[in-house]
Length: 320
Image: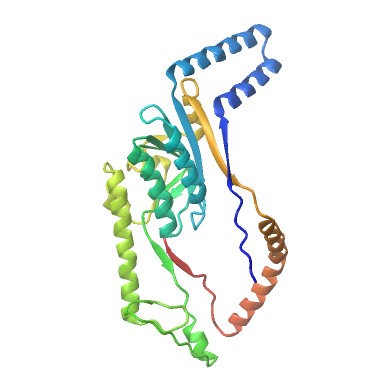
């Protein structure tokens, strides 16, 4: 009998960025500055603290580091729910530090929908891109009221891609039959092991084009100042060119941007972490062992396929 072990509840950590930065400033000043200069710094920090208290404005900082499956959306949805339940519309702001080259359509569609919750609630959303926000990553970025990009960040790639290997000829060479049973004309358009038909390939291409159209309309809705037809070619651009094309609004690193907010805003960084279960810990140890075995196994597979004059291609579902 198999037992399901539920994941432990998420642990949300909130740190006050102002306090963290100011503590480091005082430590440096104690070592490098005179007593008078240290006193001046202390007075300046106290003045800034009084100003922030008077303004009563808060900035909540989230982080999203995207993989192919957009698995970080699980943490993002909880963090956004927390903000919606506690922050004040019209007073507080949200900053998302985004890093993602894109991935699965449904995963990044959900991630983008989480950010739409903030926009629909009336919050000002700024998204900072230090390295990359491409494809599904840009789908998320375009929802922001303002996109801030580092000068050499990679932005854009508004397109859809899918790769499907086909082993039908290899199976035929080894006298292996493959049979696929479906109900519904287009339940399966292309397959890895069967012989793909022109009709199936055409339908699969049609589905990709439909996904691309949905992607373009989504970008156009949240970023009307952008000439979508000009940039929806699947190409990507670096920050400076992206600014000229209206893909982003400002060239600045996230560090510079947040530093500019510290004097007048209380800035809080929200971080969600899940403690691994015992099973996950054991699984990680097993994965480390497997890592040592996989190369040898893969080499053997490649040698076998090479002897059959075949090539191994990695399969990909449609991706943004």
